[in-house]
Each structure stands twice: as structure tokens, then as C-alpha cells.
Length: 363
Image 1 (tube, one colour):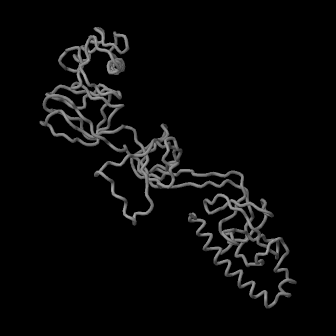
Image 2 (spheres, helix red, strand yellow; image 1 turned 120 degrees about the horizontal axis):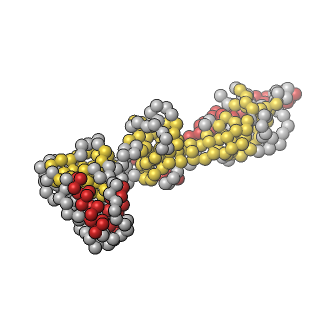
């Protein structure tokens, strides 16, 4: 499939071919005069020559960079439901827009705080003296992070662990039992930013209570589904922030769309090419605020190559290109191999193509 710039070249070169044919017709009438005036110059190519060029440019050596630019949004990403197993009545709930960190209450059940702990493994049993397992190690890691010590950090719930839990429970104002159940805490990978409250006070404390997500601002952008390299984790991009500053960014991965039924409907044909939503994390030192951004993915880059404006290309033969080399009053069309098209320029190579030579540029 031809790129937009290649199609543009086709339109330009088509117009120039008509000009060339007119020149040839005139030359048939006055061939001798034309040749004596140097309108045709010898030169290893049977293409029409002497085509009038509106302007000329020199072949330059440069770097050609192809990029895909899309619009994006900087925000907190997609929130998901947070589920509580707490027993009792919901008497308090963290406010929308607030941030809940390790050891802080996410809700209150019967006015007892249900706090957030960090981890990947949900609590699924009562942890007490003598219990062993990775859930014990996860609890002990949280206790240490909250400055409760005096026990050996391992996978065994010891009497020393229970003593640390009692000190923690006392400071929270909870019943001092020395045990921890799945109804007492909520586990998440890290701090949570509350997006919405989904439960009301007075309702049962068990169930989906809020939607929440990470506290780090990220960039969400839709990229063409036909360019899978842009969706790979670790792919590099440059994001232009609302203030205009460019910042490096890295793709975190693809956002899985929320299901609205058993089988997602195909997009209407008038919506253009299919898109994939990706999330990118910005460089840590960047100052950021929510708002629209521009995301630029470099898809190809050729350095130290010979380039001309795409308007210099002529369509010759079957899907071939050439340029008009000009030397004073004489000119000749030579075939070229094209490389990367980008930024209004095209990489070229071929016989007679060198840095500094003059080529014609179409209108």
C-alpha cells in the first residue's frame, strides 16, 4: 500500500509527465533547433529530457526519520473495582479523588478501619500462630514497612509475629486478637487513587465498594492496529505535554477494552482503520498535568543518506522513479532507487546521484 507521500508523488509526477509529453511534441516539429540549443543532452537514459522545472535544489546528505504521530491523553488510566470482604455495615468510605496508601483505611465496617496492604496475593484464610505460607511472608513484609518489627521475616507466623500484629491492631483501634483474616484488610499492588465510590453508606461492607487505579499519571493513546510494533511493551515514544515540553515515554502495554457483551461488535466501516489503545509511562523526572498530549513514535530512521524533496521525483516506467539532473542549460532524467519517505523528503540513490548535484523540482 502506498503511503500518503508516495500518492502525492504520483499526482505530482503525473502532471509533470503531461508537461514532458508536450515538450516531446514540440521537439518533433523543431528537432534540429532543439538539439542545437542543447535542450536534449546525451546521457544513458531514453526518458524525455529538457522538461521545464519550476525550481532546482541540490541533493543533500541528511537523516530521514519516519514517525507515526497520534493524539493521546495524560491521566490516571483505567480504574477497576475494589472488592471488600469486610463483615458488618459500611460506615465510612475513602472519597473520590483521594489516595490511599499502605496501612491507611480504605473503608470502615461497623466503624472499624479496613486498611490497605500491598501485595499480589489476596488473603484467603485466617493468619495466626503456627500458620505458614507466602501470605504470611506478605503480611510480615507489610508490618516491617509500617515499622512493626521484633519478628523474623519469613513464611512462618510465629508468636513474635502475633505480638507485632497486636501492636498494629491496638494503634488502629481494632480488637487486639493477634490474628489477621481476609475480612480485615484489602490487598493491592500499590497505592490506590479512588476514582468513584460504588457503594453507599449503610449498605453491607462486603462487595465492590470503589473503583480505583494507580496514582501515577500515564498516557493513553490509540495507535493504528496495522503497526503492531507500537503496542509492544518497552516501545519508545516522545510525548509533547500540555505545556509544550517533549518528554521520553515507554509503552506499558495494551489496554484491554471492557466487555460489553459476549462478542464485541465490529467497528462501523466509516470509523477508518482499526485502532489499539496503549498506555505509556513518562520519564520519572517529567512534570505533568492531566490533559491532551501528542505522542510521536519513530518507526524508521536512516542516517547519512542522500535526500531530495519528494517533489523532485518523476514517475518513469512501471512503478519506477527518476529525477531530472540539471547542469546549466542541459538536463537528463535518470532512474533512482527510493528509500525512506518522511518529512517531505525522500532518500534516493543511483548513477549520477551524489551530494551537491542539482535536480529539478516540480511545481
